[in-house]
Image (tube, rainbow, N blue to C red; front, side, top):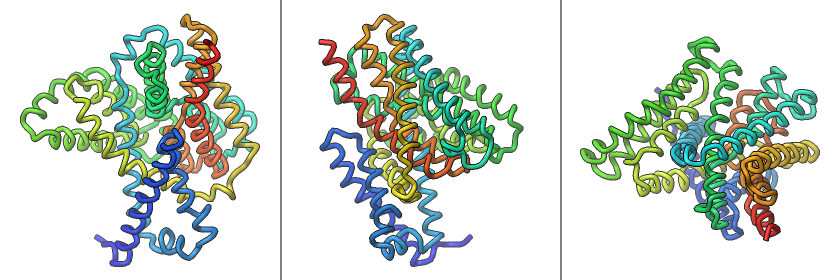
Amino acid sequence: MENLTHQEVVNLLLQLAAMLMLARVFAEVAQKFKQPAVVGELIAGILLGPTILGTFLPEIHEYLFMSNQQANLALDGFVQVAVVLLLFIAGLEVELHLVWSQGKSAINISFLGLVVPFIFGFVFPYFFPDFFGLADGDRLLFSLFMGTAMSITALPVVVRILMDTNLFKTKMGMLIVASAMVNDIIGWLIFSVILSLMGKSSNLSMVNTIGITLIFTFFMLTLGKFLINKSLPWVNKKMAWPGGVLSVSMAFCFLLAAFTEWLGIHAIFGAFLLGVALGDSDHMSERAKEIVHQFINNIFAPLFFVSIGLKINFVANFDLMLTLAILAISFAGKILGSGYGAFRGGFQKKESLAIGFGMNARGAMEIILGLIALEAGLINEKLFVALVVMALVTSMTSGPLMKWALKSKE
C-alpha cells in the first residue's frame, strides 16, 4: 500500500486549512447579507480555484492544488464523503408524517412542481442539445438529466428561507416543506434511474438495477423505517449518548451508500434514504439531529462547496445566453407548476405565487446533480457553470420574492 509522502501530507493539510478557513469567512459574510452559507462557500472556492487564485497568483495555486496528484486524490476522498453526508442530512429533514398530514394539497403542488419543470427541462435541451451543452453521449439521457435538474427543490434551503421569513410554522410553510419533501424523494429516485442508464460500473443489468432500486426505496420507507424506530431505543439505552447513535447512524449511512454505489446508482441515494428513515423515527431526538447537522454543515459541507470552485474556471466557462436560458426555464417551470398546484389546492393567486417562489429554491441539490453529470461526461463545463449560477440565483431570490408576493396580497 502506497503512503502519502511528507510533502503530500503537508499539501493535503494546507488544502484543508485554506478551504475551511476561507469557507467560514465567506459563509459568515453571506449570512450577514441574509444569504445561505453555501453562497459564501462557493465564492470561497472560486477565489481559491483557477478563476481567481490560478489567474492572479498561479504559483501559489499550482503549489496548493496542482503539484501533488496523491494529495489531490486524498482530498477527493474527503469530498466524496462530504457529498454522501450532505445527502444524509438532507434526508434527515424529510418528515414523512408531515407529508401525509398535508395530504392532497402537498401532492398537487409537488406533482405539478415536479412534472412542469421536468417537461420544460426536457423539451428545450432535447431539441437544442448543442446550445445547452450536450458533452458526449445520448441526447435522450442528457434531456432526462436536464429535466430532473430543473425539477428538484433543495429542501435544506427551503427550510432555512421559511425560518428566516417567519413562515416555517404557518400552514403555507408546512405545505411548502411537505411538497419539497415529496419532490426530493421522487426527484432523487428518477435521478438514480438516470445514473443507472449512464452505464456506471455495476455488477447488474440495467433492469435489475432499476428493479432493486425501487424495492430498496420501498423497503427503506416502510419496513426499514420500522426496524430503525424499534432499534433506536436500544442504541440510546445501551450506548453512550450521543456517541452511540451518531456512530451507528454514520456507519449505516456509509454502508447503504456503499450498497447503492455497488448497484450502479450513486452512493448519495443510499445515504439520502437512510436519512429519511432515521429522521422520521420518534427516537431520533432533535438534539441528536442538531449535532449531526452542525458537524456536517460546518466541516464536510464547506469542503464540498469549495471544491466546486477548484474544478472549473468560472469566468472562462461563463456563457451568458446559456445561463439566461437555464434561469428562464428554471423560474418558469417551478413557479408555474408549483403555483398552479397551489391554486388548484384552494390558495388565492398571490399565495399560490408565493408558494411557487418558495419551491423555486434549488441550492446544493442541483450543484451535486451537475457535478455528478460533469464527472460522468454527460454535460460540459459551460452548462455546469450555468447550473451553479442557477442554483445560487434561485436560492438568493426565493425568500425576497415570497415576501414581495405576500406583501402585495395585503
